[in-house]
Amino acid sequence: MTISSIDAAPPDHAPARATDAPAISAVSVSKRYGSVTALDRLTLDIRRGEVFGLLGPNGSGKTTFMRLLAGYLLPSAGRLTVAGLDTVRDSLAVRRRIGYVPESAPLYRQMRVGEFLAFMARLRGLPERMVANAVERVVDQLALGAVVDKPTRALSRGYRQRAALAQALIHDPDILILDEPTNGLDPRQIIEMRQLIRSFAGRHTVLMSSHILSEVEKTSDRVAVLLNGRLLGVRAMADTPDLEGWFLSLT
Image (tube, rainbow, N blue to C red; front, side):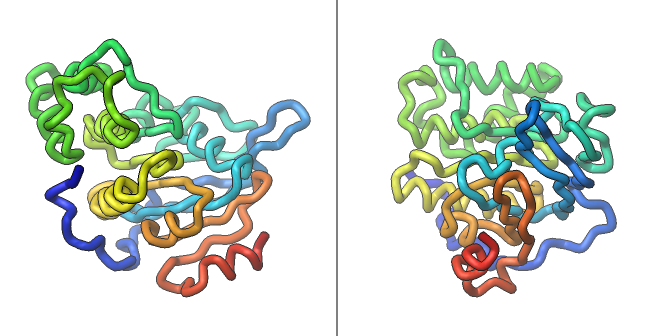
């Protein structure tokens, strides 16, 4: 299973384009569940067009931050914005700008891949005249042509992940949020997913999480380390020749 459009090696980790307005901005954002603090006063800016990695062990707050961005959760304190829009006050407008793939990507098992993508396009508010072209675009982009008429329940793990990513891209969002996108993939699928994510840089802002150092190192322009809901540091990969050493120095 290969993707013809990404056979070439991924681009070097070039700095993201400078911009006055970040794609994502968190200012003292916290999320509490009773006495448990899942995210603690996070302040962070993510630039337009970059691939930004969230690195940390399970339970560090990565998924909580992504769910806050996607509108699944409300912050307990602080302000979180996407393209200058408040995720609470402007929730619907924010969701139109985001494509989200959770770690366990849900698919409608009774639908064929093409039907599922068309359904998601309509759910995202695409006009009917644009649905077929949008499906064709993401099927080509994610190399899903061989399975477009198969039910999603019959897909391999690799194809399920591609179908989940395709639904996140169906409305051509500004921002992609990918929670552990290589989890459960075999080595070849991991390499292809890395290359695919790198190919999104520039056209989309990509926020991805991982607890695997090598995945963040080979994919991201910049990386943030989270632990116990707190931000420990942010570094550009171009300035971090030893990610493992930096990570261990923080944790």
